[in-house]
Image (cartoon, rainbow over all chains, first blue to last red; front, side, top):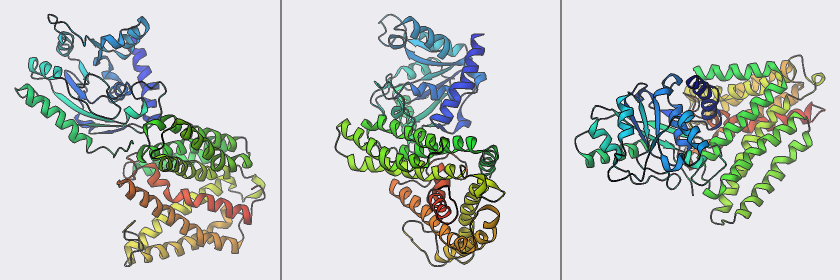
Length: 212
Length: 270
């Protein structure tokens, strides 16, 4: 019942908003897996990023799409917690973590359940329309499950629509550029380098962004 | 080709459905064009809410069309949106880049909302003032002639084009293409005008000769803007056609001219 409601919400409300109001432009859709397990790794500037990534998928895949999101941010209040987990379908992750607990256990289990993880390696939204440093969690995840395809995605524009700290969204055309999937290459440093440089290379295909 | 038929279909259905549907459609087209323009042109971080305010001008302008108040329509954008955006931006307090950004906002609203709005307002022409095709015929004819002119210039340019008009802005435009296009379009305009417009022979000759020139300059102007911004197309909204602004460029200049020519020579309403 809840899954049906989520699909209806996506098809009748969220997708039309992304398409008609935000004017989302998607390139390289053929690279996008519609079945898991897979890790979608994108740059992060805004809560709108999650919405754009979810809209890339057909509503039939929605049950398997799990945005990885910070527990400390989204599980703050009961309402936000319910909405994030039940409606958006986030996979909460404890950013602070403890030395003993495995922060990525939840992600691994999800991948073993053939789910599609939406992951922002920057770990935070940061300054609008600027790419920060990538955290290596995605490399550790790929290392333990080396067969999982990693799909690099460059997102542009969402930082203007709703930057960190802003409350009112303003429509600007957004782009999502999907790159060729790749797999774990045996080394964390080179893996992270490949991921970041691929996403940066995808950004060259995006329309010029002038925000002064 | 697909998106071409889709546009024709949507505009055609809205034309047949009457002024209400057409006004809503054009309000949305204005929004898409303006969003494209303000995404591409440089704006400042502080201007996000001003952009939202500029989008609101679409609602206000098209509301004036909806209530059929031409006086409101005439002053809303050039005076009150102008003053409103300038005040808000000055109030925001960032001065570097102020003049450039406030100018960009005004440019966007004028071409995307004010100029295009004239097309929607033509749909409010009283039935008694136009031939049997009705107000929808007036609008159809404007869109048809503007598109025809684009195609005619292209074809003549391909056939005979030798001397470039403005090699820096739009290297594919030639004198042969432009003049061939103007004459062909003028001939078609004069021939068909009696079926769609209340214009008599001499006024229709005048409009037929000037309208394609305006269309040409609308095209050239958008090309200059695209070169300035360093893009080939304004977006990828319509596969094979580029963005909304690429498709609307000529119409943004022909619409107000056609409207005013009709107002001067034929229509009592405006």
